[in-house]
Image (tube, rainbow, N blue to C red; front, side):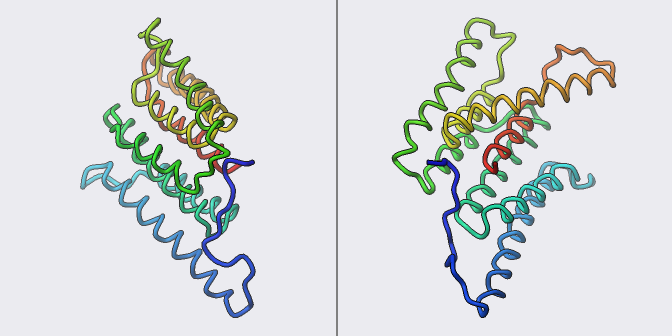
Length: 212
Protein backbone atom coordinates (compact mmCIF):
# COMPACT_ATOMS: atom_id res chain seq x y z
CA UNK A 1 0.00 0.00 0.00
CA UNK A 2 1.14 3.54 -0.75
CA UNK A 3 2.43 5.45 2.27
CA UNK A 4 0.84 8.69 1.03
CA UNK A 5 -2.74 8.49 -0.20
CA UNK A 6 -5.62 11.00 -0.13
CA UNK A 7 -7.89 10.79 2.92
CA UNK A 8 -11.02 12.84 2.08
CA UNK A 9 -12.27 15.62 4.35
CA UNK A 10 -15.24 16.41 2.13
CA UNK A 11 -17.51 13.90 0.33
CA UNK A 12 -15.89 12.44 -2.78
CA UNK A 13 -19.11 12.63 -4.81
CA UNK A 14 -20.59 16.11 -4.71
CA UNK A 15 -23.48 17.68 -6.55
CA UNK A 16 -23.43 20.89 -8.57
CA UNK A 17 -24.84 22.78 -5.59
CA UNK A 18 -21.74 21.89 -3.57
CA UNK A 19 -19.27 23.10 -6.21
CA UNK A 20 -18.89 26.56 -4.72
CA UNK A 21 -18.40 25.08 -1.26
CA UNK A 22 -15.61 22.90 -2.64
CA UNK A 23 -13.94 25.85 -4.36
CA UNK A 24 -14.28 27.92 -1.19
CA UNK A 25 -12.71 25.10 0.85
CA UNK A 26 -9.69 25.07 -1.49
CA UNK A 27 -9.22 28.81 -1.17
CA UNK A 28 -9.63 28.75 2.62
CA UNK A 29 -7.11 25.92 3.12
CA UNK A 30 -4.64 27.56 0.74
CA UNK A 31 -5.16 30.97 2.34
CA UNK A 32 -4.51 29.69 5.86
CA UNK A 33 -1.39 27.91 4.63
CA UNK A 34 -0.06 31.06 2.91
CA UNK A 35 -0.72 33.13 6.04
CA UNK A 36 1.26 30.65 8.15
CA UNK A 37 4.10 30.69 5.60
CA UNK A 38 4.16 34.50 5.59
CA UNK A 39 4.28 34.62 9.40
CA UNK A 40 7.18 32.16 9.53
CA UNK A 41 9.10 34.07 6.86
CA UNK A 42 8.53 37.39 8.65
CA UNK A 43 9.72 35.97 11.96
CA UNK A 44 12.91 34.74 10.29
CA UNK A 45 14.06 38.28 9.48
CA UNK A 46 14.48 41.52 11.41
CA UNK A 47 11.75 44.16 11.42
CA UNK A 48 13.44 46.40 8.83
CA UNK A 49 14.28 43.52 6.47
CA UNK A 50 12.03 42.37 3.60
CA UNK A 51 10.27 39.00 3.64
CA UNK A 52 12.52 36.36 1.98
CA UNK A 53 10.90 35.77 -1.41
CA UNK A 54 12.40 32.39 -2.36
CA UNK A 55 11.17 30.41 0.70
CA UNK A 56 7.75 32.07 0.40
CA UNK A 57 7.41 31.31 -3.33
CA UNK A 58 8.64 27.72 -2.95
CA UNK A 59 6.23 27.10 -0.06
CA UNK A 60 3.37 28.66 -2.03
CA UNK A 61 4.15 26.32 -4.95
CA UNK A 62 4.22 23.32 -2.60
CA UNK A 63 0.84 24.23 -1.11
CA UNK A 64 -0.71 24.68 -4.55
CA UNK A 65 0.69 21.36 -5.82
CA UNK A 66 -0.61 19.55 -2.72
CA UNK A 67 -4.11 20.89 -3.38
CA UNK A 68 -3.97 20.01 -7.06
CA UNK A 69 -2.68 16.48 -6.41
CA UNK A 70 -4.67 15.49 -3.30
CA UNK A 71 -7.56 17.98 -3.18
CA UNK A 72 -9.06 19.12 0.12
CA UNK A 73 -8.04 16.04 2.12
CA UNK A 74 -6.32 15.12 5.36
CA UNK A 75 -3.32 14.18 3.19
CA UNK A 76 -3.11 17.76 1.91
CA UNK A 77 -3.40 19.27 5.39
CA UNK A 78 -0.78 16.83 6.68
CA UNK A 79 1.53 17.78 3.81
CA UNK A 80 1.02 21.48 4.50
CA UNK A 81 1.84 21.03 8.18
CA UNK A 82 4.95 19.09 7.18
CA UNK A 83 5.91 21.89 4.76
CA UNK A 84 5.49 24.48 7.54
CA UNK A 85 7.65 22.45 9.94
CA UNK A 86 10.35 22.07 7.29
CA UNK A 87 10.14 25.76 6.39
CA UNK A 88 10.68 26.71 10.03
CA UNK A 89 13.58 24.23 10.30
CA UNK A 90 15.15 25.46 7.05
CA UNK A 91 14.96 29.13 7.99
CA UNK A 92 16.38 28.33 11.42
CA UNK A 93 19.23 26.30 9.90
CA UNK A 94 20.03 29.07 7.41
CA UNK A 95 19.96 31.79 10.05
CA UNK A 96 21.52 30.18 13.14
CA UNK A 97 22.74 26.75 11.98
CA UNK A 98 20.60 25.32 14.77
CA UNK A 99 17.24 23.54 14.63
CA UNK A 100 15.07 22.79 17.64
CA UNK A 101 14.49 19.11 18.51
CA UNK A 102 10.78 19.99 18.56
CA UNK A 103 10.77 19.84 14.74
CA UNK A 104 11.79 16.18 14.52
CA UNK A 105 9.43 15.32 17.39
CA UNK A 106 6.54 17.06 15.62
CA UNK A 107 7.33 15.17 12.40
CA UNK A 108 7.23 11.88 14.31
CA UNK A 109 3.85 12.87 15.79
CA UNK A 110 2.56 13.99 12.38
CA UNK A 111 3.46 10.52 11.05
CA UNK A 112 0.65 9.12 13.20
CA UNK A 113 -2.02 11.14 11.36
CA UNK A 114 -3.81 8.70 9.07
CA UNK A 115 -1.56 5.96 10.42
CA UNK A 116 -2.10 2.42 9.14
CA UNK A 117 -0.57 -0.53 10.99
CA UNK A 118 0.31 -2.22 7.70
CA UNK A 119 2.76 0.61 6.96
CA UNK A 120 4.62 0.35 10.29
CA UNK A 121 7.32 -2.12 9.07
CA UNK A 122 8.21 0.15 6.14
CA UNK A 123 8.25 3.19 8.44
CA UNK A 124 10.60 1.50 10.93
CA UNK A 125 12.86 0.10 8.19
CA UNK A 126 13.04 3.52 6.54
CA UNK A 127 14.03 5.19 9.81
CA UNK A 128 16.74 2.58 10.47
CA UNK A 129 18.15 2.72 6.92
CA UNK A 130 18.54 6.49 7.21
CA UNK A 131 19.65 6.63 10.85
CA UNK A 132 22.21 3.80 11.16
CA UNK A 133 24.68 4.82 8.39
CA UNK A 134 24.65 8.47 9.47
CA UNK A 135 25.06 7.57 13.13
CA UNK A 136 27.93 5.18 12.32
CA UNK A 137 29.64 7.90 10.26
CA UNK A 138 29.23 10.35 13.14
CA UNK A 139 31.11 7.92 15.41
CA UNK A 140 33.80 6.87 12.92
CA UNK A 141 34.40 10.17 11.10
CA UNK A 142 32.81 13.00 13.11
CA UNK A 143 34.34 15.66 10.86
CA UNK A 144 32.56 14.20 7.80
CA UNK A 145 29.21 13.50 9.44
CA UNK A 146 25.98 15.46 9.18
CA UNK A 147 24.85 17.59 12.08
CA UNK A 148 22.63 16.27 14.85
CA UNK A 149 19.57 18.16 13.58
CA UNK A 150 20.10 16.78 10.07
CA UNK A 151 20.24 13.24 11.44
CA UNK A 152 17.11 13.63 13.58
CA UNK A 153 15.04 15.33 10.89
CA UNK A 154 16.05 12.91 8.11
CA UNK A 155 15.23 9.95 10.39
CA UNK A 156 11.84 11.43 11.31
CA UNK A 157 11.10 12.06 7.63
CA UNK A 158 12.05 8.49 6.71
CA UNK A 159 9.72 7.21 9.44
CA UNK A 160 6.86 9.29 8.04
CA UNK A 161 7.48 8.51 4.36
CA UNK A 162 8.47 4.84 4.68
CA UNK A 163 11.56 3.03 3.43
CA UNK A 164 11.38 3.78 -0.30
CA UNK A 165 10.35 7.42 -0.15
CA UNK A 166 12.45 8.09 2.95
CA UNK A 167 15.64 6.95 1.23
CA UNK A 168 14.60 8.81 -1.93
CA UNK A 169 14.16 12.05 0.08
CA UNK A 170 17.60 11.67 1.68
CA UNK A 171 19.38 10.90 -1.61
CA UNK A 172 17.68 13.77 -3.48
CA UNK A 173 18.42 16.17 -0.62
CA UNK A 174 22.08 15.15 -0.43
CA UNK A 175 22.62 15.30 -4.20
CA UNK A 176 20.90 18.66 -4.44
CA UNK A 177 23.02 19.99 -1.58
CA UNK A 178 26.28 18.81 -3.18
CA UNK A 179 25.43 20.25 -6.60
CA UNK A 180 24.04 23.59 -5.41
CA UNK A 181 26.77 24.23 -2.84
CA UNK A 182 29.53 23.23 -5.27
CA UNK A 183 28.24 25.81 -7.75
CA UNK A 184 27.70 28.42 -5.01
CA UNK A 185 31.18 27.96 -3.55
CA UNK A 186 32.75 28.01 -7.02
CA UNK A 187 31.01 31.26 -7.97
CA UNK A 188 31.82 32.91 -4.64
CA UNK A 189 35.37 31.48 -4.43
CA UNK A 190 34.69 29.72 -1.13
CA UNK A 191 36.22 26.57 0.35
CA UNK A 192 34.38 23.49 -0.96
CA UNK A 193 34.91 21.77 2.41
CA UNK A 194 33.11 24.51 4.31
CA UNK A 195 30.04 23.29 6.24
CA UNK A 196 26.63 24.35 4.95
CA UNK A 197 22.96 24.14 6.03
CA UNK A 198 21.58 20.78 4.92
CA UNK A 199 18.01 21.00 6.22
CA UNK A 200 16.71 23.16 3.32
CA UNK A 201 17.86 20.53 0.82
CA UNK A 202 16.46 17.65 2.89
CA UNK A 203 13.17 19.56 3.01
CA UNK A 204 12.99 19.79 -0.78
CA UNK A 205 13.69 16.06 -1.10
CA UNK A 206 11.06 15.24 1.51
CA UNK A 207 8.32 17.31 -0.12
CA UNK A 208 9.10 15.77 -3.53
CA UNK A 209 8.86 12.31 -1.97
CA UNK A 210 5.58 13.21 -0.25
CA UNK A 211 3.94 14.45 -3.45
CA UNK A 212 5.10 11.92 -6.07
